[in-house]
Length: 320
Ligand code: ADP
Image 1: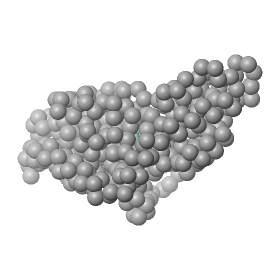
Image 2 (image 1 turned 120 degrees about the vertical axis):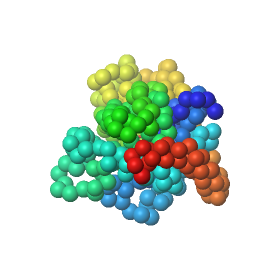
Image 3 (image 1 turned 180 degrees about the vertical axis):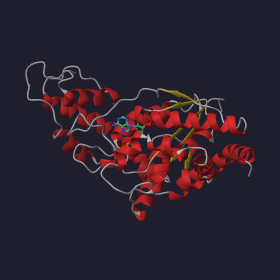
């Protein structure tokens, strides 16, 4: 394995979408040989907001199977709760963080807006995320804009811990992730296609059948301008721009497409072709859950081995 380590966690908050595939899973699969990759399903993070136990279990299994179906089998795959060092180190980092800095976290303020009480874990989430990262001593952490503040806090906690108790943690650099496509909702093209609203009409789930894909793309928002050069990227045509982006990300050409009807047919065909091998593999893997379990069990075992010395060093340094 190369020396460089990459780590990325996905929260099992719903069905994975075309956005997750083109924006995350594809670049993750492509980068598997350039680094020692750890990809986790963050089930503990899914407990920070109201949840249904049976649904969470199903979502974790579906996500695990999809990660394998997407070709991430050369990486170390794991489910966060199966690697207890994450929760253990999180507690030590809660003992390092201050309420003042957690109060400033934008995600907590946004998710807590309008409700007078939240789960305590939503508030302490950044300490667990810091543990997720620091346990693996990555030199760099690629994160999108929405997680930047949390990784800055991770750095602050690592620096504070190191100066108070000794040099235990590698202070990671925050980097911009490899560019994948940014996919927007088909019905509201100014909003990201996210898995928390995977049931919406404008969101393509990875397991949607060709018919469902066709129906969703057919209803995609375009623009009232249907003139001769209607099919072009433009800031005032976010729906058309999004369809062209999806087409390009699926490796199809937009040459010769003039009407919205033709564009939508091309997008449907490209998305169906992109999803077909993934869905075929998914069906095979879903029929063999013992194999999926074995892969994730081996992944968790490797994670425990890699992270145990870091936790032990942190415990010793803090006086346990
Ligand atoms: P979601 O909004 O689907 O819950 P997350 O915030 O958990 O997604 O992100 C999981 C990964 O998928 C991240 O790497 C994120 O950048 C990527 N991702 C999520 N939605 C999209 C999208 N619509 N387009 C591109 N990438 C996306």
